[in-house]
Every structure is written in structure tokens, then in C-alpha cells.
Image 1 (tube, one colour):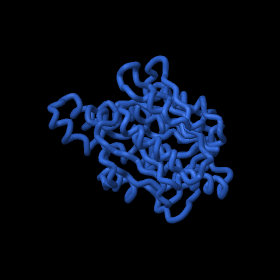
Image 2 (cartoon, rainbow, N blue to C red):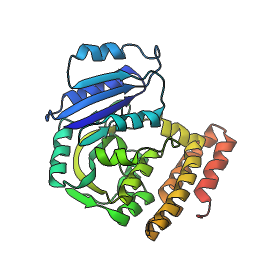
Image 3 (cartoon, one colour):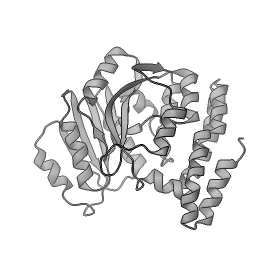
Length: 298
């Protein structure tokens, strides 16, 4: 079985698309659990939609209080029971072979801790798009993957610290390992990378596959996009990368420590946000982004 955990906050239409893509899986070895983090009364129709499904594989719970993104993620981790789990975005889409492909990859690589199947990016309208961020990720930071590739150790840590090329909502995680590490409750937009590095330093291996079985929805309304324009994302990132460099050095991985200090992809991302910050006439954001992009590594 594969536990598909879906932390929800938002409107019903995109959530229905996500859920219906799970119901359409060719491989039935899955169970869906939805944790609705919307305050009572904010979004109508969500409980009624799930009550009407009548599918025993689908469980729906409304949080008694708003947990926020990271605490809701952690709830997904704590409540998972199957050997592998997914923390799917409530606006993303699983193509019909996702569950089937994840099971096949786990069978091929039984010691894998993380499975990254092939992903394509869609916009708010559901059409496949090619954004600058995703094109850079694939052409500059991501390893060239044809078929199936297994990565581990310092080489994997260096690759991810240069530029996190993984798509968090599409990842399948070994449940026992992600439960052993967990999310840092102090982080809001870079919590996935810290968790992944924790798994890698524990000896975990990543299996990446080129077959596209997942659609990741990218739109400007996301928390990470809005915090990037205001500079909040990079204030958090600076502290994270400095701490990660120290941790990599202490672990005996100096190349990974160097990659964390430079964090080039994050600096380039800050540069791309400068025009939007200037357009909003936010002098404070411009200063934060500029210092982050051009500051010396420590």
C-alpha cells in the first residue's frame, strides 16, 4: 500500500481535480487521507464532497484548529501507516500510472528512502508550461536522468545544495525514515530540503525516474512565490544554508558544506525576484534580495 497524504488549504475545484486523479489510478494499492486546514466556514462544500464519494479508501478530516503548512505536513507524516507515503499538493495531479510506477521503482530498488518519478509542470489552467525556474532546474541543476538513476551520499547532498531539483509533492518517502527525521517547525518554505538532507546524512538513497507520471502545478499565488517577492523566503534561506554548511562539515562532507555556503541557485532565484520587488516599490524587499544575492559566503 501507498499512503497518499493530502494537506489541504484552499478552494474546492482544484482539490477535486487532485482527488479525482487519485481515484483514476490504474494500480489500486493506495489509500488517501485528507487533512483540511481551512477554518470552519472559510470554504464551503469540502466536507460534503468527501461525504458523497462513498469510497472506503478515502479518509477526510478537518483540523480542529488551523495548523499552518508545516504542522499540517508533520501531521501527515505522523499519521502515515503504509511502508511508503506521498505528501501531495492539493492542486497537483497524479497521472494514471503514478502509483503503479512508484511500486515498480520500490520493487527494483528495495533500499530506497526517496523516490522521485518523472514530473511535468502545469499552470493554473492545467496546461503544460515551461517556466524559467523549471527550465533552469532541469538544465543546470538536475542530473541528466534517462531511465532510472540511484543517488546517495555526499554527491547527492552537493547536487541538492547547489539547486534543489526535486518536486516535493511528487516524492514518495519511506515512512519509517521520514517519521524518524520529521519537519522543522521553524521553517515555512524550505522545510522540504532540510528534511531531505536529514535523510541523506542518515544514509538514505534516492531513486529518480524519467517516466512522467505526475503534474506539478505552479502558480504565483503560492506561499513560496509570495514570500520570494517580499524577501521573506531568503531571510529564512540564509539561516538555513549557513546551518546546513556547518552540519555538512561536521558530517565530514566538505564539498557539500561549500555548496551550502554558496547556494548559487537560491542566489540566482533572488536576482530573478528583484524586478517584481522593485515594481511593488518595496525598498525593504529590494535590499533583502540584493544582500542575499551578492553577499559573500561565510
